[in-house]
Length: 309
Image 1 (cartoon, rainbow, N blue to C red):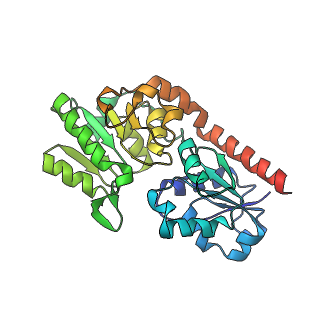
Image 2: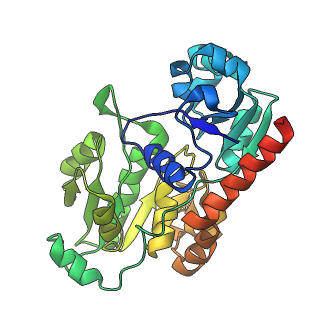
Image 3: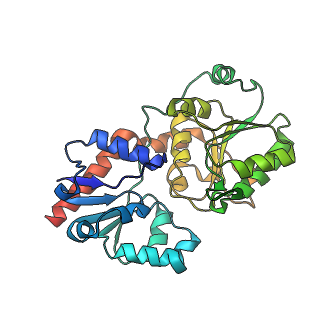
């Protein structure tokens, strides 16, 4: 069995998944699509980079991370249906995404979450040493948000599926509870959140680009991480908080139910009642460590290959 994986080069989390999978599965990976038995479109928009003759002649697995409202109408729906003609099996990472895809296709859909690399994300005991290293206030209450919140084509425009407006509402409430609140941001496209924090005079610290090692340390510096999204495939932040034993509360998106205690999952009517549960999250995330994740994906591909031989 040989598997070809579409390439992204977008500095996105999926690039890391692709590289980690290839490194762990060199014996079944090929970068020559002619040799492949299976073509894995790991990000749906990369399908156009693959010549149609191979999409027609190979067994095609397509990963759909999540769908937005625009994917069910107009151009978005047309694009899905064009690609659907070449796809044999869909892969998605959560029950929520599975339900979305069902509305657009009758093809088989496999639910299989990606893994969290517990070799680079792990708990660190000394929070205050980390804060000292990054010049973070030792005694402040620090809330983290490491996900993009602005549209790529207009950085002042919020990416509404990520719920940055919701995050701001929650932060306004948290400021009443914690007058020494600091918001810790990382990553690109944070313009909307930053403008709102400035407007509300909420203190924040922003590290635009950090390495994965630094990201692990920043998780370990937090008092709380908030996922306020309306739509998500993962997000990977839930896995990373769980494996680093970072307090987290989240909306009911992506894999939240698979990892978090239901008391840690909120909507905008009850977010003040949400409470982190690091023990439950850490226990549940053990099912998705790198080793177990790789095993699950190998079993999936072996099963698919045995059916197409």
